Amino acid sequence: MTQVRFLGPTLILAITVVAIVVGGPTVMRHLAWAEQDARIQQGHKRLKQAQALENINKAFRYVAESVRPSVVQITAKKGTRNEETRRFRGFNRFELPEIGSGSGWVYNDGKHVITNNHVVKEADSIVVKFQDNTTADAILVGADPRTDIAVLRLTKGPKLHASKLADKSVLQGDVVFAFGSPFKFDFSMSQGIVSATGRQLNILGSTGYENFIQTDAAINPGNSGGPLTNIYGEVVGMNTAIATRTNSYNGIGFAIPIDMIQNVADQLIKTGKVQRGWLGVSIADVNPAIAEELDYDGKGVVIAAMIDGLSPAEDAGLERFDIIVEINNKPVKNTNALRRIVAKMGPGSEIAIKFFRKGKFLTKKVKLTEQPKNLDRIR
Image (cartoon, rainbow, N blue to C red; front, side, top):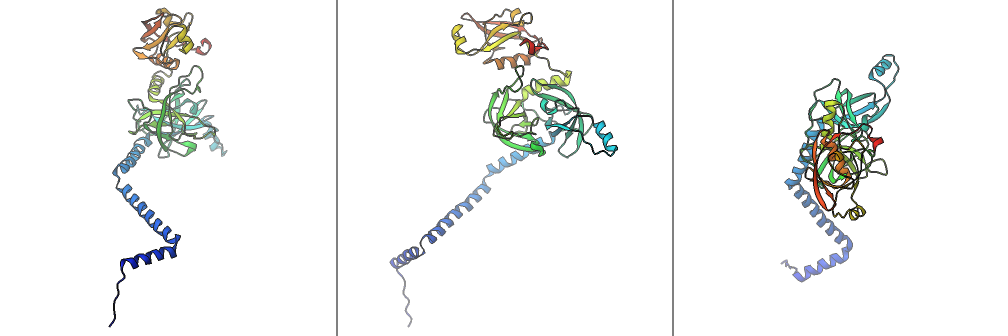
């Protein structure tokens, strides 16, 4: 009769130990791999079940769908399209030399295209390309080199899809999307955050106005003029410049904020030019030496000099060495902020200036005049 013997726990343990000893590291590696693979598969399963991640993915796609139709590619050329047409009809395969390319976006009026001045500067002809690859000629309505903003209008073409503009400024940490045609890769989109606001680059000269949004969303040559949007697909700025040592993306890009764009674009559309307010003073930031000399503790802008015969501030009773601390009840921290505020108010505007003089805070109302045309020589 056959006898069946059962192995006890001690013997099973001994066999397992012998197997591990004999198999050595190979068995251990297989066990570790199996354990890691199980974790990977479980991770994939959990990611698929994470509805929040899918919602983020969908939101990004919705931004692309809502913004893309209003984005354009811009090519600036020397010479006229009539000249180009005549050359082609004469069987001379001549194309107008390209002097610049970039991006743009349809303004909220649905009739104009906004881009950077440096994209279309000195162009004799401008061609706008749309998402569906159709093109149309455009003319320059007006440009403002001091903010690097230009407005175009199509001579003829399709009905435009207007952009939606944000009604509030972005803050550090906000998610943003940069649209455009970097290196002529049409209608690209990149994503990042607002790294900082209020940046001064000093790229527009001493009479320029800068208040850039800094972002780490990828911006490259060709993105200039394209819109920067928030998570709702609303335009918060216009891609304009990058800080780089390689002439391409290094993680620091800059965009003109939408409030500055609106102020300039609306004037260019209405009159073809930009008028700015004029206070008629030379100014400087309050530094420790100035603060000590004038017995002042705080931030502000000191009046260094009056512009002879062109100073509404002097006419209103302000004096040299007065420290301007507020305009219309809003703090003025530095010279760049003061220049932007006054310029934006426009000629004819009456502003309330709070200032510090000889230990006292005073307030005067000043009626701004128009900024002189020869500002470079005055300054």
